[in-house]
Every structure is written in structure tokens, then in C-alpha cells.
Image (tube, rainbow, N blue to C red; front, side, top):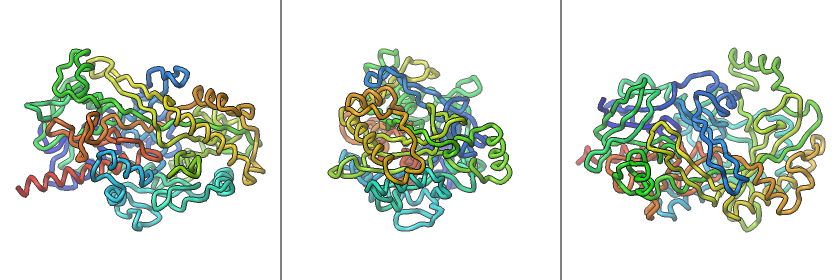
Length: 532
């Protein structure tokens, strides 16, 4: 098999790259995906997120090593094993991040990735169903809608945020992120509108080949240039080659894994597994970070929350309504409102994010016989850093990872501040007719030590892992600002692993932007080569 471009991974970034490159009928593209095809109803139905998110055949179901600063707990890390990658499992909340996130990238050595540089790509990738403007796009392949028809508890949360003095964000993906807001989401016409839907629309392009069930085992390297990839499909190893470039978009966990399996990474680690070192690149797998969050839970009066929707007879009726008309509670996501707030007046831009749920939760499960609401909150400018490493030279073995969550005191401090701010919001008059007792962490948890213990025991991942092939110019950078891997020809990494630092919010939207901008740079290189 021979193509112009080979894209490894069909997630938010890789799917976008394959879609944009194959818009030119003269370019042949092979898209390799280890998981299965798009289209299953549990992916298309927005409310069915938990069906795949918590496990099953469309999920890699990774977990971290025991986390030393989180009571030695292993933290579950779901990753999408299906066309669309993790955008087929996520909660569909669409958050670009704050403009200063991208200015910080550029200041750290990622030239050309300032907010002014990335804004055009955010605009061209989306169709904002509320209409385009100087900040929002209206002709892109990813549809973005704003949540409406809010539940009384959701309305109470937004009112309480405002009453507490934190304000309202008119468009947090536009000029100003601060305040409470209904979320933008990747939902259109009652269905998930993400990379899987995009690939489904373009799958029949004659110049695009999509191979599912293709588990990449290593990159093919000849004379310092990547020329293709080996992969296992239907039990046999096959090879695919390309004439232009290989684009590695396997995500923050598996992009570094594939690089290391191919001999690109920290030499000492590769040698310990008997892997021939093709290029010593010490930053591969380092700089892993994620958003962590805790649930501040309150009970409420019977029938006041959405927990009753989980009763079997109601779930059956809701499911039938969606299958017949793509409407009703199944046509929306549980994460419908939230906020971006500053823990102190001198904080330069929001440093905590909320997802508010009109459900009482036991873990991630809303029991149908209990009522309440949940403030899901945590820092968005994570300081702690971890790593991804090989477990062995076996390409089918899961890599090992550790977040080192809560290692840095600033992360612990922001958690303490965020819990106290949550209590301030919960005490506002908007919650007077809904308020029930605080169940977690509970009213007796007031000291710094109490709150630290609660966070250590209960903080969980927001599933926004990134940073393991970071972009920049320093000795730990893996890719240059044009996303080419340092020291290797014919290879770019285009996914969330290239983020030098995490963005302020859910990472799906910036991952889509990385794919959009990455494709633009690849096509610009091609035009320059053809002109020469």
C-alpha cells in the first residue's frame, strides 16, 4: 500500500487532518485507526456517553500507576478506541481555552501559536449554530450549539454564580471567558457532532482510505526519514508507505508509545526494553498533565433533580423518543452549564472551571432513587507533571503512565480555594428553594488539612491528558512549531500531545484546532514543494 500521506489515529486531530488533506482529490490519504467504525447509536446519542466512557470495546480503558500524592490510587484513563477517538466518548463540551493559553505557548517557544495565530483555525473548523462573527466560524465541518432549555437547578447555578459576584460569560469561546455560562457543545440535530460524524460524511471519497482495526506497531524509518508504518490487522502484520509525510495523531498516551516503539525517545529507556535507538529524544513521554476535579455534592428534595430520569421505564421512553425524532433528554449531554472563575482578584485569568450537574452522583453513576446536585470543580492551569513510558517492547501492551497529580502545592491550594468558592456559590439565594445538605466533603471539612485530605482521596481525572510530545525549541521539546519531530524527517505529531501546557478547559476543541492548523501547515509545505 502506498499513499501520499499516512495519518495514524482518527481522533479529533487526526480525523481533521485526514479530512482536510483529502479535500484535494489529487492527494491520496490513508487513515489508520486501531478501533472500530463510527456510527454506533451509543456514540451518536449524546446522553449515552456513559455506555462507552466507562468501558467496553470502544475504550482502551487505561489506568495510571499508583499516584503518590493521591493516596496511591490508580486513576482511570478512558481513551477512545473507535473512529473519532476520544471525541466519540467525551461529554461534548466545546471549550477553546483562554487567549493567554496560546500566548503562553508562543512565549515558551512555539512560534506561530499565539492566540491571534490560532483564532483563524478555530473559526474555519467550526459552524457555530448561533452564527459567525469575528470570533466564531459559520462554515466549518464541526457543528457547535449552545445549551438551552435549562433545568431549574442549572438556572439556579448560573444565577448563584452571578449573585456571588463572578458574572456571566456572554461567549466564553469569544472575547471573554470569565463567568457562568451554558456550555457550547458538539451536538447538531440531536446527535454528537464530532470527528466520527465528519469521517462518516467523507468516508467515500475516492482518495481517502480508512482502515479500522489497524493497530500500528512501529514507524518505518529509512536513513533518518519515516516512510510509513507497520500495523497489525486481522491478525497479520502489514505495512503501508507514503511519499510525503506520516502524521502521528494517536493521542497523548499512544503517540509517545508509538514513537518509543519505533526507537524515537529517551535512549536509556528504549535500551532497557531492547529497542534499537533510532533517535535519542528525551522529551518523548514527559510533560504528561491533565485536569483534576472533585465533586462537591448536595442532596435535595425528592423529585427536584434529574435523577428520576434514570428509572428504567423513563429511560426506555426517553430512548424511544430519541430513536424516533432525535429529541428529548437523550438528545443532550449531562454537562450543560458551568463557569470559569478566578480564585483571587490578582489572578490574571480564570484558574478554575466548573461543570454543574443537576444530578446526585455516586461516583459517576446517578442513582435513580436519590436527588441532589453536584459541583464538579478543579484547577485549569495544572502545574504538576507526569509521564508515559513503555511497559515492554510488546506493541500490544498498554503503556504505563503517572500523572503525579497534586504534586505541586499550587494545585493543592487552588483546589482548597475552589471548594471554598463552591460553598460561597451554594449559599446564594438562587439555591434557597433547592438547597439540601452538603454531603461531600461535608460541612465539618473546613481546615486546609481537611480539604487536602478530601481532595487526595477523591480527586479524579477530567480526562484531558496532553503534553507528552510537547512543542518548542528546548531540550525536552519533541516537535518544532511546524509539528515536525526534531531530528527525524517525514514525520509530524498532530494531536493534544504537542501542547506545551494545558488549555483552560476541555481539550477537545483545541485538539480539533491543532488538527486544522496542522493540516494547513502540511498543505503549505506541499504547495511550496510543488512550486519548487
